[in-house]
Image (tube, rainbow, N blue to C red; front, top):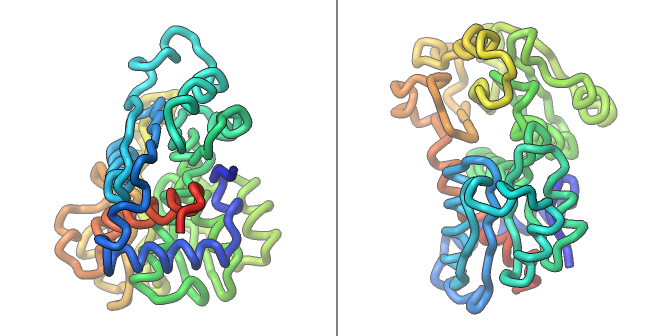
Amino acid sequence: MRSLIDILDLSTEEISELVATATDIIKDPAAYAHKCDGKILATLFFEPSTRTRLSFESAMLSLGGQTLGFSEASSSSAAKGESVADTVRTVSCYSDIIAMRHPKEGAPLVAAMHAGVPVINAGDGGHNHPTQTLTDLLTIHHEKGRFDNLTVGFCGDLKFGRTVHSLINALSRYQGIRIVLISPEELKLPSYVKKDVLEKNNIVYAQTTDLEAVMPELDILYMTRVQRERFFNEEDYLRLKDSYILTPEKLVSAKDTLSILHPLPRVNEISVAVDKDPRAAYFRQARYGRFIRMALIMKLLDIQ
């Protein structure tokens, strides 16, 4: 039995296999419509979600399986004080695989240690979000045809952005990757990520507060929202929330081949006017989330 807690739990070869399976699903979804007949996915979401929870449920339903679960902690026994370990022990009795989102870093790892079925980390605090990273990688593969020799800009909340941390981890294993970190001083990438990931893997990176200055260099721009739920001080959030707003004017100097990604939800960091730009890939990215999660569910359940 195997779980997915961190994107580094998967080798680059396994990621390529998942991308290939997801691509095949896109081409011929009917061939996969009964792969998980009789299987049940439990979605344990202790924190709000739209895309991740619904794409997991859609993935299992598209494979012929069924789903059960909850969408907020208040509708589970966690509201009564039940531990994560006891919750997953119980839910393991009713399901074949679990997808869990939790506001506390490390909670899915604890779940995996006590569950009787595979556990997928669907996001834990500001730590990791491996299935969003798989979605990002599938998007990059379809947009660029490769994972190497790319200049990738990450813009916005790089301090608390678990999707940023996970994707940087994943990209650090490919050749010719250059990372550009664009954020206010207060939301810079944590030093441990720079030290343990970028510097350890000899990844070339630059830090700046000026998005427009680096725009012409980028092959991929990964926009993120400033996350209100990660701030203890409302004044700090209000001061920083509009640090970067991507508009058509700011894209004038960008490459014609630029791909704009965003894990969503968007607040106002990308103007709706950008949605019409063919370089805007974030809704294509959201669509890919279902297919890569279908491939992952099959892998963890050892279904060919």
